Amino acid sequence: MVGADTAWIIVATALVLFMSLPGLALFYGGLVRARNVLSVFMQVYAIAALMSIAWLVFGYSIAFGEASPLWGGLGKMFLAGITADTVRGTLPEVLFFAFQMTFAIITPALIVGAYVERIGFGFVLVFSTLWMLLVYAPVAHWIWGGGMLSDGGIFGAIGARDFAGGIVVHETAGLAALVIAVMLGPRRDRSKPPHNPGYVMIGAAMLWVGWFGFNGGSQLAADGGAAMALTVTHISAAAASLTWALWEKVKYGKASLVGIVTGTIAGLASITPASGFVGPIEALIIGAIAGVLCQEAVNVIRNRLKIDDTLDVFAVHGVGGIFGSLSLPFFGMLGFANDATWGAQLGTLAIVGVFTVILSAVLVKLVALVTPLRVDAEAETNGLDLSLHGERAYDHVS
Image (tube, rainbow, N blue to C red; front, top):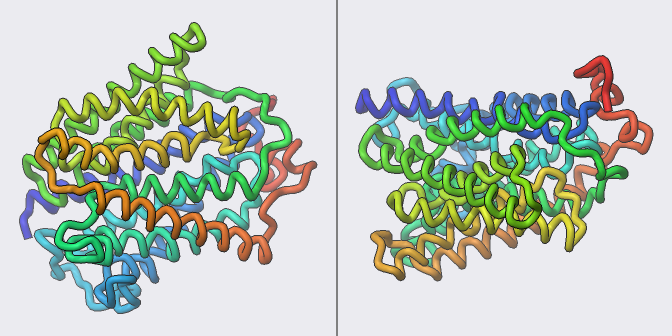
């Protein structure tokens, strides 16, 4: 074990958990109406707790076991055979487990943004658990765990390149969000603006800081690669923030706070798969494009297709992650140093996309047989905070 690597990944693990609690909770909570803010907090918090247990019991073994190229098996359930002295690379394996656990937390938590203000709480818990185990963990195994989409797999010597989760995290969460939004149907009242843009900004700022652990930690070492990943992450976020705001100003005459911070998230999602392979100039280009591309995707999903992906999970995370994954072979064709290929990237995006859409739809149908998918009209009108949790965030709600 290398002490510096261990110390850095301990910090990175805390940073990635910080992205969910409280970063994502505040980001999403500020975007909904006041009568639903606590329900969003509850959903993200409960997912964080439940995914931690599910990752310990089954998830880690499925993702990082060695049973076959399709799945990792159940040999590492409950961390069987792993002690404080067990090593994976230069890290204690229990630390690698904890770092990857924070990814298993935030991925289903990202989906929350698609179904806020109308979802049944029991459905959230059951669906999130099954989805993490049956969609996220197998995909993580295929790409990060030595499975069928990694080097030596179905694409030959050079498999998919996804440094920190453009495919494993953002494509899967984005597509699952789109599936649920379509199957759940729109809110009865889509007219209300975000109740607290200040929460949104604070949450986005926490996500920005936490993303240093998300991408920089994915190097799994305290070295120059981690430093470069952290740097390009910041550059892409900054560029996307500015281009989103500029494009918003051009189109609507005003640049909003919610807009600029949404651009930040678009830049972060887009650089995630490429952060270990590109330099600052490529990051600047990726972020600059992401700020416009993801904003236009929001317009297509929300206004043209009329899909109530309420907090734009697919347009920001899904589109951003897919775009960032395709940026690698694009820059490779221009002569920048990376070894990704169009075939591996496109093939992986297609396989993961089809798998995610089909299995997510099946899980929605199956879980809805056990616990209601959607709350009734009265609960939706009164707000989920009071209807489902018996609490209010404010004395006067809207």
